[in-house]
Image (tube, rainbow, N blue to C red; front, side):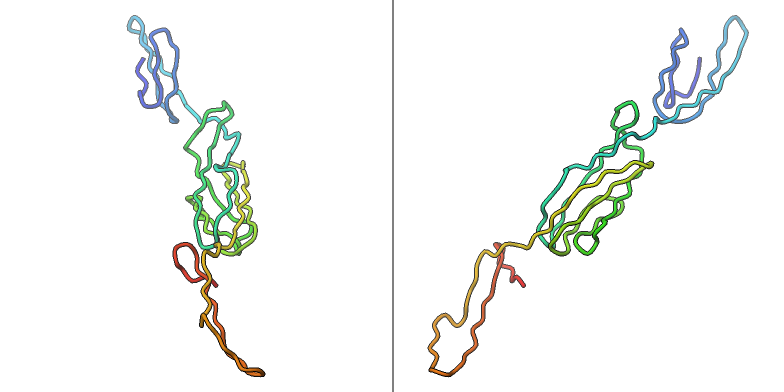
Length: 165
């Protein structure tokens, strides 16, 4: 019995073991008699899509990588389906359609969807402002006369020293 080994193997007793999708011809020869059969190996349908991690809080202007774990009807994790990622709230968080990389755009909530083969999962992403680490007021000492005005400025910075809006 001689099928293409990358698709399937056949034991001497006729037990077929599928290795990959495809179609091969299996030839059986016994005492100078030969017969052939077409063997087609197909994927089991997708049963579930799971997004990992199952949720996230992301700072505005930051990124979070999500991954889709896909299982077939046999419960085996599979990698063959193409996953399409979408954001149902793109003004809050966008997502790269091919990779699942989420970019936080504005504070609020976004629902991210991973879909393949008619199955989907969703994940909630909370976008928060970058926390203020320091505030500097200038000038630092002010003397103002009665009924007079002066300008005071405050600059807020994050922990990396970036000026915040």
